Image (cartoon, rainbow over all chains, first blue to last red; front, side):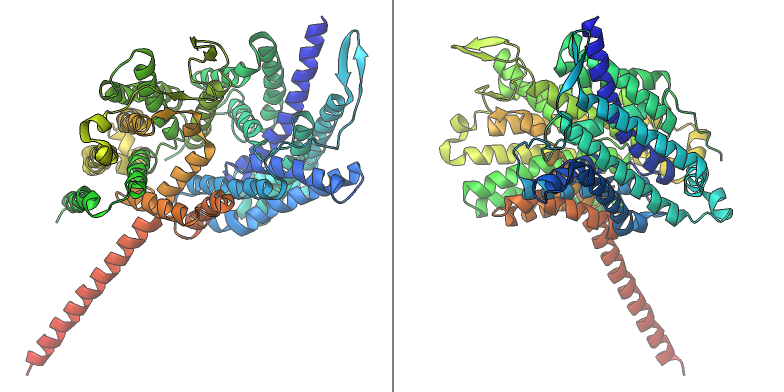
Length: 292
Length: 346
């Protein structure tokens, strides 16, 4: 029983963390058809920004988190304005833009390496301590992560369904040409999507760094896991991404407990390959019918 | 002159230069760097075939290379095979892995392929470096089946030292790597100009029509993916015999990026792109040798700049330049003959 609670708690924490990353990837893919390989670097950036704001500039933690999220959004926006915008509608866009985001990610990651060094640093923004359910220790940090993640998802859901901006984003994701013809300014929508995705990634990066430690490559494996979750959910499917993130978080915790930490990632990969053989467009994804 | 014949002539000329180069260059460092250049260029030509020609967005090429290298090293270490016998086995092992990856991934759409193949390489890397189980004992130290973080050493080499003597052993590796590169390039020229290449062009230009004419994308992609894996695996075997150590550093993301940059900067899908890109990146790397901190940043920036401004790469730029010059001379000669005609007119 205690073990089960333990696994569930760590699984939900992982799931909450992946959920934000996954949704941010899914949002960008859905609206722009861009597979954002700079996501891992954005996570790293978020973690380090928050660390620098607290330890070097002496900001209170909550303010540091808000500033970091804002800066993450800014970096996302810059990525769009400086690079992605110029590539839209060019030949081979889908492939070239992935290569471009890989390049951006490398630059960001190595800038972090240059500024903060290669040694792992502990994230100072963290809710210390915890409480007990039965004999299971539950860290406050996990509770904060789950609540913050659910909160962010709720905000995002409200933004996407209730606001003008959210409706425009969904319209462009569903059918770009039709949205354009209806007068939706697609360039603006893309900029907004990258802004939101950058902000979400920064938030996810802070959470991630409280569980692991800060290092220039810390975002890479979580990015790949978020990709895997996206693939299972079907790229661009945001609600599916959310379910899949929590399910796979718990799955990962179970595998870690039963077979060891080493096999968590391989097991996830195996699951996704089997799932894709069964449903090539993602478990929650819908098949796109291509017309002639 | 047909395009295939032109490529064959260019290839023969480049090969001839490469064959005589060691007679004019002394210095083991230069020979060693050129050997490494041949190895990277082999991987990139095959990757270009997969990625640029067949349109498979695979990021697993480095994993195939490492798998070939590991197989060669492990056959030498565990079964005491001569590395010359283990070398083709490394190529075959990479083919087997590519078939498995291909069956799992190639029915999917582009970005899904990229994600899965990247995840597969990372899983391979993680499984190797987290391997702590004792497979055999070397004295009192415990060794892992996959080599773990330490990798493999002392599994033999190609015996160039005994064969050619200390002075010329580097030349042995040089010519071996060059042979593999020449075979790989010949194969890629063949594929690009064969019906296979035409099929991919058809699938790119008008997928629906190509499919309705019975061209199976999956079948052709599998064919290219598996056969290019053979040369990639061979390159891995050459690498393991040349360096005499094989470790998980062959699966580093930084190396994957370095090779990706070679392919993109050289020119995706262009016959001579990989060689030009590999040469450009190796030279740039040599120039930045004293600033290792900025090496990866430079690669990242170059990637962004090239896909943004020159998506057809160096090779694309050169062929556009040649066409323009050709066009100008043709136009010049046309106008000259025009003048002659008008002069002849009474």
